Image (cartoon, rainbow, N blue to C red):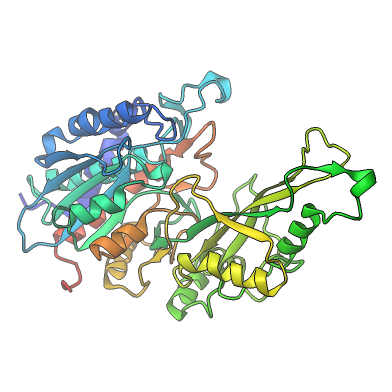
Length: 468
């Protein structure tokens, strides 16, 4: 049975139209895989040991569950199908963990652990982040296999981790230990929102994140403001001036080494070709904030940003008439691959010393594991191959985003496996991921099934770059 590309896409879309996709999504969402909770490991293990194996039982993949190298963290599900070692191998990524369900805070009493269908919106925790998205990849694989009479035409390895919402703790160590098992020619993950609801999209990496506290600790106790105001150095003002030295009045970063020398030409070109959609309810960008001369898209996808997450001195809930002994602020820097993450704090230390703030301590914090910055070259042949496939399916070239504005574990796969990394998001900016009322848009789910079936079909046809 030879089958056709159109036939594979039609099979994937029928999976949606006939309700099979929704039925399988309900089974995934029903497992409360809240990795942020301290007692989450049993649910995460259930997802890997029971839910995922049941989903892929009839697909002739060799399945295994790998324990996390970090004790107490969730495992990783891996399903492998090697049809011929000479064929290209695709590593398909998803994450089975979700943020807290926040049951009781959803509209109209909706249950986060069930899928509630209201028109084109499908509500439930994980419908987009990320259970609904890795389900798209798997069902598209199933459709191509059925159309080809039981074959894919390439080798596939499906990896579903359970710690992404915590920064993927242990994943790098697992990739190092299992490098041969997980070796592939290309990484394709499905996660995140698109810039528009009306055109497909690829993302090629992520910005990295570095968080730290700035602390001015001058004395152990506060002292009466009447007796000591104007005499004792006020840590609140010292910290305010230190913060003011980091950016100018309009948010331009002043710390040498925090921003790239320039946006690389291929990246600048890709950013300039992006198409955006205005989503009701989202804020407008402030045109005069940030690096002057850059577009909004260049500021988001090609530059560095810094924000103050929190700032405190004294007791804001019950102010006392006293000169405080300490002031503290937490900052977060988001940076692209052109700025090494491990250079951020040393550069700030040099800056503060040069500006006369030696008393300001920098304490790097890890509330959760933070992802590093990463980017696959927009000119990589695999990027062109996947973009061409998406264009054949939709009759429209996709948005190619050089790196996500947020974070994901792209850096681990690029650095440990040496594979180009491509993300294909199937959600939108208004999906409420991480909050109550997380939801998928049904048309994007259906379109994603067709897109992925087309990509899998084209890889199986041999429309791939030569091996490096």
